[in-house]
Length: 92
Figure 1 (cartoon, rainbow, N blue to C red):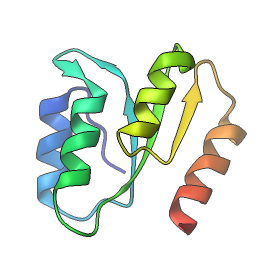
Figure 2: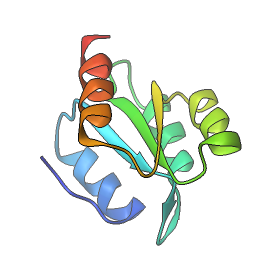
Figure 3: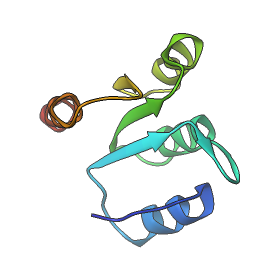
């Protein structure tokens, strides 16, 4: 597991090696998570599954799905919900 608290840290972590799933917060200190989703989708044929985590699932959820996220989970959420989405993302 790799933790990244910003877009810059996430980009650096993704550049280091294969990642299976990205839990992507929408609002990060240095930008919006959807910009990273678009970058990940553009880079290469194999990319990690993207699960968007957001406090306002409405419009942001639609935008996350349009950006290539496989699922959107609104905050607050239960651990079981997150585990189920990650398992589904890994099985795709």
